View 1 (tube, helix red, strand yellow):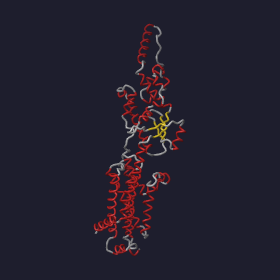
View 2 (view 1 turned 60 degrees about the vertical axis):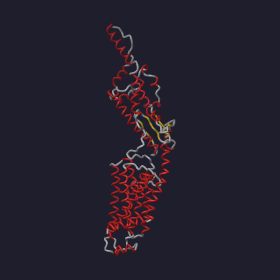
View 3 (view 1 turned 90 degrees about the horizontal axis):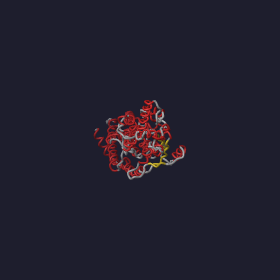
Length: 470
């Protein structure tokens, strides 16, 4: 009996034109529209020059001058002059006369040379103590445009040769912040030191992700440069500080095409997360409809089922299984279409994406199963409740307005924890950004708990409904 009910329900679902339209053909059509519309926007953003304001502190310029001045001492005549002075002192001591030449460096500078053992020591040195004779004009003329990070930004180009970053000239930080607030620039980058770079942004789009990637990669490479500078054996393999910088910075991939774990930084992929969530929750309608038609106060079929010797809970669970199989099959088909035909990169392991989608569809069917058993209201009223959950929840999770979820998170974060659409989109987002890990398991745990609660409530209510009470 159980298998026969499943087979009958499967046929009924596939024959329902309304069900197939809203759960398969409509999402495919909407997904196709999303793909063509948003791919054009994202591709244009990916190759657009990013306007930024760059503020370089004077302390950062002096730090770089000191580093270059130290690096240049080996190429100057300092070592020969000190050797000549020491020889003159030795001759003077032997003859009892005053040295014929003066010490080429001051006592302060000599103490500084002996005290610098690491990059942190070097950062404390003032450029003014360097004797003018041993510092090249090139080092003295260093300005903010010569800072390694600024040069990195100027060298960054897209594959077609188009500059990636456009430096916008600003008179003050207040002016830069006003331009950022007005949307005239994408960010304010402050260079406070060789490896002390900060970024101020007001948005979280593609341009901001690129800037964040550049800065984090630069810091990582600069930490390697400093590690070499602090290691005498490693630094001895290089001719100068510039050679260390050139090797470490030129080998870095400042803008990777991949995301944190899911290989997709496209912010518009969130629309497809919401679309998948919507399809999952649309399965609630089929589940609810099957339950309602089993109730004696709703249909003649329900009367026959209620007075028959069939175990009603087992009968409804068989229908539940059939709806779940149908819904998972539809989702697998839609997901395959999105990924293989539209080439949407959901991010994360493909197998886990399919598994997550299957688990999510189970939540949708469970919600319908529970709503179908709530009260004795007509099917139309329960359909309205599901419409609010599916469409209203989709809107609140960002399907129609992408910033809505962030607004809800700020104003009423608890709603995002109980909104099925928000929970499902968080699951896909976690898989994309962080891969299979603690955060993903946490979101999947919430999906599992919600599924179990809905199914348990539905079963409990089903056991209480008898024909006499209806």
